[in-house]
Length: 173
Image (cartoon, rainbow, N blue to C red; front, side, top):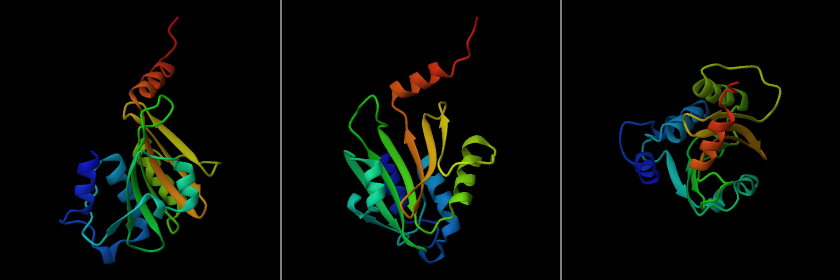
């Protein structure tokens, strides 16, 4: 998926023109890239950057990935799309895909992801929210890191998925 993701993101084709990228499109870009594995953006919409280009607070929360692909999106404010892989470890998610923006509306973005992942939007009391999809093999989250609003998918390892499946099995007498 990593190679395909990069090719789709940076490839030519009928995507979103760079001049038309709006902050309201960021949740859809996140969904296409991180949940569907297909981001069809026009050339000029995103520029590859290093992991070090991510905001410091976000870098700290993401730790030390073994490899990274990061793009800065052209549009209002600063926005980054990232795909990270980590060394195999039973307690670490092997892949993370996310979008961070200092201009995105947190509530609208969280609602869009919740609707996509769960099929409904529920009132929330907390600033950060996480949704587990054992069937999909990931947990999705909406949170903040400094001035940035973050939408992220943490892909579960086989061990994490098996443990979640076991934990969610109904208790049978």
